[in-house]
Image (cartoon, rainbow, N blue to C red; front, side):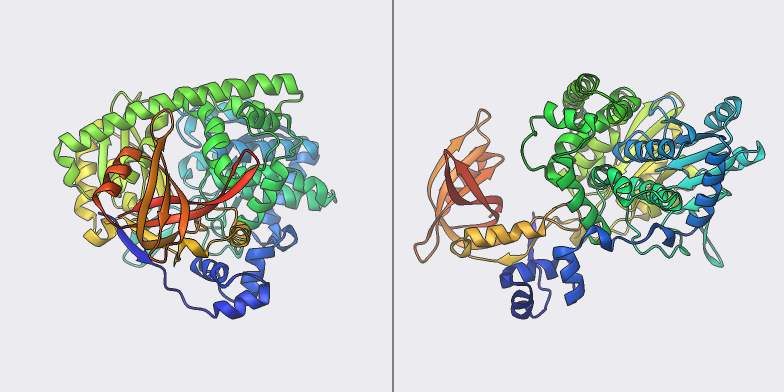
Length: 570
């Protein structure tokens, strides 16, 4: 059962509305997203790129710039080691293109998800030494590679880490002790002594800020720095960062540039997915373009996505974009199959009673574990890990719910794991097959989640009659975009509605189009996407229903009408 709750954060909505020329409902929506104070509201509504924090605020930034400027000047061989997801590929692209612009003698290596696994490992270090590499620069990884970086240092290499993942730690009697690798410079805003104000930026933004500082040092124009903006934006959305503060500004501005990008690869991918000529939203990045970029690292090699970004003509870009789009279609089918197998295991075994779901699918493609974990988490509203068999044991990915810090819970199971890393909401790990059951038991023995925390909550912004909605309000709601984590689409609610007429549409009969009437006789158009026949059966049994909804404009044959997109009903 869902629990519907109304957000009740207080502020003088009338005053905010008068100050910024917005409806008090919009003022309330902004307050509900934890934006307080007139200056913060102004930044939220009208913040621009000039307000982004200086890259020089990062701990070790000056050190890293001095090191890399020297290496570039001396023509030392630099290797950029990235990661195989959208954030890792974008970070790698930003660093390699930025370094080349500065005249660096640099190459890249993105680990293979299957053969290499995540991040740096011993073989990568030995290969770098064999190839005569002088300096390694990591992006979107490296913060937990203690032994590997120590080996690189022993072999005489210079190492610069750029990362955004949690800093590894251990709890001791004296308190929490953070473990930072012995690199020559470590750029990661999550370090406790790093003064950079934005702590929740993705790896590509960290990489971009390094290039930004290097460009400033080299007296290059700001225009050149901004050429990487759309890559920082797509990585921020694709890596599900909170769209607040700096992230909100760079995604908002990056999306504007994306629809008219000069990058051949991005342009071809937009075209391959039928998005050319229109406005590209965070939704399109998160659910259309991003999965195509991720697909190469899941089912093939992430080098394909990097090659797409680096394509120097439209025909090469078009071929690569077509390949990635086709790969993503295959990935969707495999994901659906894996999800069905996971649901069957949860439903037919004792693990359905667990508060943390650990599902072992030995034959599942390990690259799909994270996506399937996300689907299982959504279905059961519980933290979920999907484990798969790999060459050297078992690998897995987890996706969490807000009250459960996945990374902290993995720390408590560290003795059972070979490797692990991640965030509070997502993590990756590897372990021996004989430890799978012990891991499941330990996680659940340690789990303190209550029934209330495991009950899905539908958070309503404003209980608002459908009759209040007009085109001007919908236009003002667009000021709150881009929507995503930390800046969710507004959700309104109304109770006591009668369903006057209802039609089921769509090839899969998954759309219900209807008219709703309130107690005063006001009639509104509404639409529901999902199990339409289930919705119809529910509505027919009741005189009145309650709905949560998002207001939208429906454009059809040149006519524009207001409609409510129904999200939940009871």
